[in-house]
Structure formats: structure tokens, C-alpha cells
Amino acid sequence: MSLIAIENLSAGYGEIGVLFDVSMRVEAGEVVSIIGANGAGKSSLLKAMSGLIRPTAGTITFNGENITQLPADEIVERGLVHVPEGRRLFSLMTVYENLEMGAFSKHAQKDFKKNLEDVHKLFPRLAERGKQLAGTLSGGEQQMVAIGRGIMSSPKVMMFDEPSLGLAPVLKKDIFAAVKRIAVEYGTTIVLVEQDVMNSLAISDRAYVMEQGQIVIEGTAQELLKDPHIKEAYLGV
Ligand code: ATP
Image (cartoon, rainbow, N blue to C red; front, side):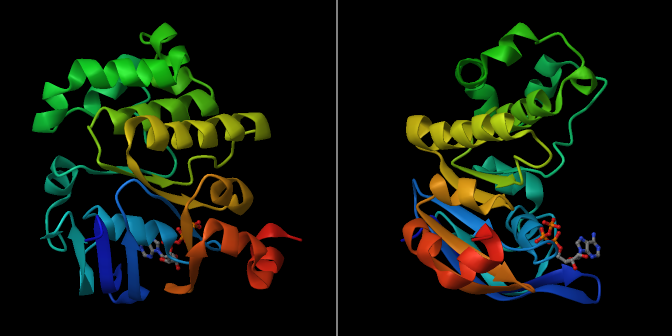
């Protein structure tokens, strides 16, 4: 049984459909990328999985349970945690207070101390800057807090929406390395939405390519790196 199974999912905003008949699977422990151009529907797919938009058709099964119509907080409670695009920090709160905000679910409260240690091990900078207001951090540091806040929720699966967006190349590398460490060291399953196709395939087991709200290609990261359409459309080679 797959950890996540999405079958024939459609969703949108009001009258406007943006996801059409999407099917995808994620196995426990995998790193799976979703790649595609601006507006392809990648963020919307993550939003549907985390209960932020309501599917109009299809099902999402997590850990054997149908979660298609569950409220967002109950989806987090089950361990499916979304690290949204644009970081969405509380800029007038400190780093530590932002991390605390991730720990609202019951088992996250129980694991608070261990999760905080994990965050500080992954990003020692956040331990040094616990009292700094989040709004005064650099872009890369803010992304560390957004990822750290996700870890504080005791995730089984972390879904990242464009974690490297807007960062300088060296900081991008750090963020991709951190995502990989979360998978390898904590056994967390990862769903990664990215426009940096090369770096995301480099840390992924498998990937799905979305175009206009549909999955058009799927394969192992190795296969996709060799695929002529991917090379031309997404890798610029
Ligand atoms: P990007 O990388 O630019 O974020 P994406 O692949 O994540 O792109 P989505 O953000 O999921 O794509 O957008 C898919 C489509 O849904 C787009 O046409 C977009 O305009 C539309 N859309 C996204 N959010 C909303 C919203 N809140 N209301 C109406 N339409 C929306």
C-alpha cells in the first residue's frame, strides 16, 4: 500500500478548474518531485492534499485512510505537513515563536523537545537567532524557519512548495541539502514542488511533470534527467 495515493483528482477555485484527473502515488520514505511551468497546478495539488482547496472529484488516501474531505488541521494531525510557498512567517514574532507555531497538533506537543533539537541540528543558525524577529532574517534564514516550523509539526510527510525560490545559488544548495537530510536522517517522506528541476531531480527518487493541470510524464529521477522533452523544456539543454 502506498503512503499517499491520489486517484483521478480534480480541483479548482470556484468555477475555474485547475487540476484535471490527477493520479499519483508516493511510497513511504520516498522523495518525489512535482515539476512544471508557472501555473501548471503544482501549488494547487499541494493545497488539495493539505485540505486548503476542496477536490471536486477523485480521492486522496493517506496511510490507508480517505482524507479527501478532512479539514486542514486534521490532515496535519495525521502527519501530512505543508511548507507553503513564500514562507508565510509571522514577521513580528521571534524565530522561536514561529517554530512554536508549528507544534499545535497533539503529538507535536508531545515531541516538542526532540523536534526542536532536530531543527537546531539541521539549522544551527536558528538556535543562535531564536530571539530575532523573523521579519528581520535573510531570505535563506526565513526559509530555514519555514522548514523548521514544518518539522515542529512531527510530519510523516513534508510537502515543500518552491523552497529554493528567490535564493542565491549557494543558499539554494543548502536548502536542497537540508531537504535531503530530512528524508535520510529522519525517514520523512518528501513531496517537493520546484522550478529548479536539476537540483530537485538530483535529490529525488521519482518525479511527476505537470502541464496545464494534468500529469504528463512520470518516472524515476534518472529517467527524467535523460528524457528529451524534460531536457529541452525544463533543463535548458
Ligand atoms: P507557480 O509555480 O507559478 O506557483 P503552479 O504550478 O504552482 O505555478 P498554481 O499556483 O497551482 O500553479 O496555479 C494553477 C492555476 O490556478 C493558475 O492558472 C492560477 O492562476 C490558478 N490559481 C491559483 N490560485 C488561485 C486562486 N486563489 N484563485 C483563482 N485561481 C487561482
